[in-house]
Each structure stands twice: as structure tokens, then as C-alpha cells.
Amino acid sequence: MIADAAGRWRARDLDVLWHPCTQMREHHGGEGRAALPLVPIERGDGAWLVGRDGRRYLDAVSSWWTNLFGHAEPRIAAAIAAQATTLEQVILAGFSHAPAVELAERLLGIAPREAERAPLAKVFYADNGSAGVEVALKMAFHWFHNRGEHRRTKFIALENGYHGETLGALAVGDVPLYRRVYAPLLLEALFTPSPDAYLAEPGESPVQCAERAADALRILLEAHAGEICALILEPRVQCAGGMRMHDPLYLRRARELCDQHGVFLIADEIAVGFGRTGTLFACERDGVVPQYLTLSKTLGAGLPLAAMLTTPEIEDVAAERGYLFYTTHASDPLPAAVGLKVIEVILRDRFTERAAALGTRLKDGLVALQQRYECIGDVRGRGLLLGLDLVKDRRSRTPDPELAQRVARECLALGMMTSVVRGGFGIFRIAPPLTIEPGEIDLGLEIFHKALSRAL
Ligand code: PMP
Image (cartoon, rainbow, N blue to C red; front, side):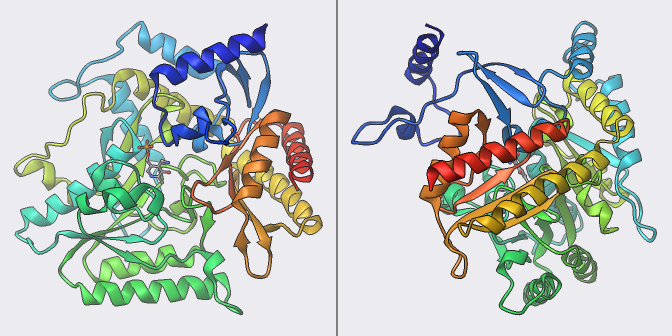
């Protein structure tokens, strides 16, 4: 009876909705293809999602690494309720409100620092990650424009990087699935090799691989001297690109090279910021401070919010001629109040340490599975952000996307939500809420193991 209700719900949904990042044909089925069932969700409960049919699913990916504290966390819910009954929305152009100011103060207080460099000192808000990236790109361009450096119109980005879906953010992304169709519309970006340790040549260490990528960056910067506004990158983990990870050396070398060439560094920490990797910020561990630090996703704990932190030298972009980027909901009081609560909870409950410890438990469990199954080509992780590759053959590393899809379906049938990179890579992205309990990690490992053996 309840299951029928879920079926009816699916039909209603498919009648009227387009789902984001989804090939809708997969849900409709037909032409000999079985339909991939949408999962109607009724509510969330900690690390679990509960379907309309009452089935419970362990959330192994936190809606693409967004949810930090589990679903329906009481402290976040209370912060929303208190703010909603005080002031839910007022535009930040011409007005000021406590949540926006207090959150900015708090963010700047915890932002990464470097002894020799002015600290991040100003915050600009937006309402989603892509918009936050647009803010940084436009501001970097605008700064040079104000100085009469009109040749500086280009950005450098990393191969296999991802920064969002709006046209500017898409232009500096290099995941073909998202970019290909729109390529003729995009501003010019120059792509430099990723320091991705998975791409290390035979006998090359991750450090050497990072050195090689930094060398390529140096050559590109030299070839385009005076033309580049900024380098944008995802520090340490390329999440959408398949949880690909690199050695910290790259970030330090990139920082030096940007300084040498008078180019800004934009660190997109929309995915890695706020504790997932075991430190509050991914660049903090490496002692690198960018001129622009973009944050979103976890910052709003489920509400739309993005913040872009900058150094004082950028300030005159706003002073001269104004900086006119604005999206209506940039830092509404409601999400900003949640952002404040998020920071308070992360620090008070030491979530970064928890992410590091639980990440080790999860990675060890996956590595143990890798020792038993040839088809697990690689396991990598930083804190509670992990990637796992399924391959046809470990030596050639040929991906096995069909196996990955079968495993994902079995996981779902066994009660766990997973995320497989689209486009034939056979990669699982794993990012459970930081509140997940050790026993739930073990359960997740057990489910994955069972799903794998069923799918093989
Ligand atoms: N940058 C990174 C590193 C991301 O992971 C994402 C989202 N996956 C974005 C930018 C875009 O954020 P949004 O989806 O909120 O636009």
C-alpha cells in the first residue's frame, strides 16, 4: 500500500519536473531499458534519509557533500526558527542586519592565515556556489580593469576541475559532461594539467607529480604574461571530477607562481571548506592564503548561501566605480543565521577532528575491501571525503562504469545512497555527514561489500 503511494508519487513527479543533473530518460525507462526509480524522500533523520514508503537509506554522500550535521539537526532547526520569526529577509543593498555582519566577522576570524600576507578581510555574499565563483572571477577582472590593465582578461584553471554551472563558472570548469555543449558560449580559460596524484607517471611520487604540474603552470603563466587575472583551483580535492586528490606542494607552488606573475589565486573551497577534509579549510593545512576564498554548500547547512572572502587589496574594486554584482538572496538573514550556527557547532563539537578520525576508519575499511577485490582500482581519501574507482583491470585502470551502476543500484536496494560520477568513469564519491557514527560507517562498509559481491 505504502509502496504504491511511492509509485504514484514518482509518476506525479515525472509528469511535471525536470531534475537537475539528470538524464530524465533514465527515470522514464523504455526502449528496452529498465527505469531507474526516483527515490521519493519524506524526511531526514541524522545520517539517514527516510523514503515515502518508510524505507531508510544511509546517506553516504550528503547530497553531494553538502550536509555536515545530518538531517534535521535540532540546533540548526532552532536557529532557522528563531531567525524566521525575527527577520527572514531584507536586501543587503542599502541595509544591514546582524546575521550578515556577525557571520562575516566570524568567517574572517576563522579564515586561513599566512605570516607574511595580509589576512582575508572582507566578505561578499551570494546565494549558491556558482554565483560565489562568478563573484570572484568578476572581481578579479574588475580590479585589473580599474588599473588600466585591459589585457588581463583570461583565467587559468585546472584540468578536470569543477566550479559550477553558470556560464562563467562553467568556463573555468573542465568536466566535459557539463561543459561540452556550451563551449561556444564560454569565456576564454586556459587549462593547466591537474596535479592529480592518480595521474602520476610510473615511478613518479605524488610530490613529483605535483612538481610536474606546477612546472606546466609556470610555463603557461610565462607564455601569457600580463594576460591573466587569476588562477582558480579546488584545493587538495577535485570533487565533482571524481574525488581526485593532489599533494599539498602544488598549492604552495601555485601560490608562489601567482605572486611572481601578479596573478590572483582563487581557492574554491565550496566542497572542501568547513571541516570535511579534517581541517577547517583545505588551504589552511598547507599554510596558503588565497586572495579569494569561495565558500558555500556546508556553510548554509541546507539553506542557500555562499561567501567570498577577499584580502584588503581588493577593496578598491568596490570603492571605485562600484562592484555591481548582486543576486537578490545574497545573505538573507535566514541562511546567514544558519551559517553562524554552523560555525559554532563545528568548533564546539570538534567536527574537524571527528572527520579525520572517521575518515581513517572508512578508508581503512575500503582499503581492506580493495585487498580482496581486484575490481577496486583505487581508494583515496582526506577526512570524510573519499573516492573509490571500480576497474575492469587494475593494471590498465580501465574503468568499469557498468559495474559501478550495478553496485549503486544494489546499495540502494540494501538501504544506502551513493553517488557515482556520471560519464563512464566508474568512480564512487563518498561523503557522509560528519555526524555519522562509527557503527554506521561499519554498516555502510558492510552494505557496500554485499552490494559489490551481488553485482559481480
Ligand atoms: N565549486 C565546487 C568545488 C563545487 O563542488 C560546486 C558544487 N558541486 C560548485 C562550485 C557549485 O556550487 P553550486 O552547485 O552551489 O552552484
